[in-house]
Image (cartoon, rainbow, N blue to C red; front, side, top):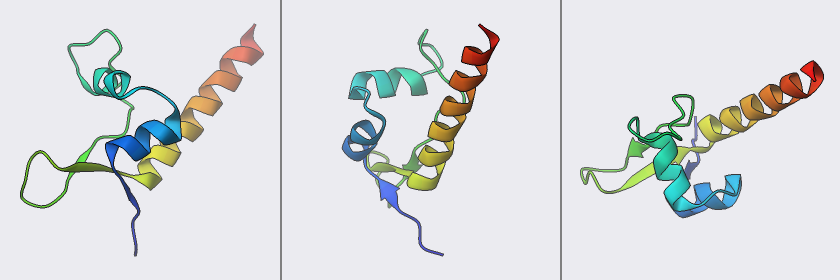
Length: 75
């Protein structure tokens, strides 16, 4: 099974949020932390090279859409 891996710049382009906001969503100490946000995966032996599975990102986007629609329907 082939997986598509997004680098950070591709991730930020896809979900249209800044790189710093992406980092905040991943940081448990940030007020913007999102435990549902896709987790990075290490690429190779270097801890600095990371990517995100596009399938995880797509699931997260779909979840955000469902949550948005659900909150819109409650108003």
